[in-house]
Every structure is written in structure tokens, then in C-alpha cells.
Amino acid sequence: MSEIQVAFVGKVVFENPTLRPLLADHLNANQGEIFPYAFMSELAKCISEGGVDSESTKSMLALMESSFDTQNDDDVSNLIAVGFVESLVALLPETSSIWKIVPPNIKEFARAWGNQEWR
Image (tube, rainbow, N blue to C red; front, side):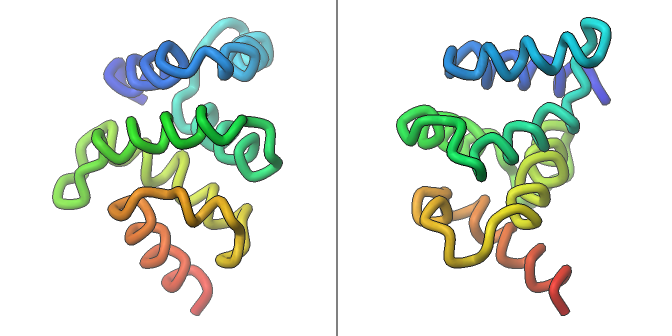
């Protein structure tokens, strides 16, 4: 965990206020601490269960896409890949309608990860 990952979680929630209850639950469960990978996994689960409206989902996916660098393993890209995308792949079948709104770089990583995992 790095301070930039904690800041990114804050940015995702700040730009998508409907996620405040999810963050509040996370903070309550973790004695007021943000664990970025756990939060991103919880976010993936919430999206997979339909707990986030489609406009907020599109908005946060756009933010993640603009922050996701497939050529470098920086802290934020790693958080998105490991915390969010890998969780989403594990939670959603390839036929889920959610994949239709996932931006291209994230979708490409998800496909590569899914193929690696399912072999």
C-alpha cells in the first residue's frame, strides 16, 4: 500500500459520491484505515452485484482507464489491475453486460488475466 493508492481511492470516491457509503463501510470495518486493494475488490464486488448505478460505474471506469498504464507497473495501475480488474474477472462471467461498458485497456487486461487464470 502506498499513499498514492490511498489518494486514488479518495479520488474515485470524491468523483463518485454514490460510493461514500461503501467507503464508510470499509472504514468502519478497518478501524478507520483505507486498505486500497481491499477497497477496490469491494468496489468490484459491489459493481458485479448491481450496487452501483450505471452512470457512476461508467464514470469510475473512465477514471480508472485514464489512470491505467499497461506499459508500467506503477502504484495506481497495479492497484487497478490487482485490486479491481482481477476481482471483476473472478466475479463476472465473460458474458456479463458490465463488460460492454468497460474501457478498452482495462478490458484487454481483463481478457489477458482471465485467459491466464482459466487455462
